[in-house]
Length: 409
Image (cartoon, rainbow, N blue to C red; front, side, top):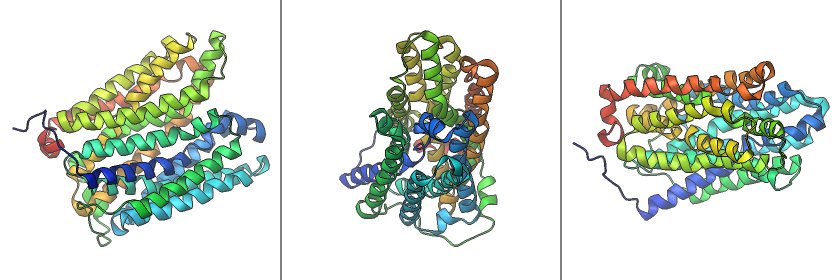
């Protein structure tokens, strides 16, 4: 039997790779919310309503889904060396994101197109980053992928921090593109391929079918869908909820941007901690536990609406810590149960269907807010964690759990 307290050590080369890959991912992923972070300014400058603001985020999600599905169908993540795909996609993303500053309110369709293309680019960045990291770790893979998802989380929160420093919307957008270019340079120059990196494989039409028939990948994807139902809607609308709650309590809203950064960025610590715990105690237990807490926070959100900001922010910090803590474990499960030649395709397909689901809740939450007010906008997000917990329970009871976290399940 494998001891639940077994530990592993990383070599200096692995630590350098961990820092380099996570750093490059963090910097490039600032592109994701570069427009959402300045939504109030864009609403004023471009005369947008809540639907237009949501569309800016939805366009990125749609672009990501289209890019990821196209990549999965073409087996791109297994045909093209992972670091090369990351670099090319990251440079393209920085270019189209930076072009947003040249758009005016009369060309909103152009803005949506640029955001969609940014999403397409990120579909080449995120899964390939996961694959590069998996190439460096077998033991401790949950921790390593947790660090990577933590970097994604902090990077996604980055534009809120830049905005909180008083930078105008053009500066936030251009700053994100500049950081992305630095991230690309780190991946190209500092990072090398790991000893467990899978060699590029030949194209095969039946690869997706093989992935879908893999029970471990399937159950991990079901859990990931529950996670994604909640995650991006929570990230997208936290600032609006906090502002509405502050106004209801008669408080200032000047703190909202910085608080939103903290709420999202603390998930970076959650992802790292959960990855370490999952390597030690099992992926299904940790992922299910994280979803139990985050779902509980979604259900509790109406109870703190209009309370003093310190109370509201405290709940959201707990939610932010747990809402992304499970994410890396679904990816780790895929890398441990998918065939080596299908690892990239399986990761890309999982992220594609997950991000497709986010379109429902990102658009649905403000619609519920229009009907019932922001106080009651978030409880529906708890549906995802409930279903995700059920998927993890099924996986833990299956024979596939023997392949997870060195036999810990």
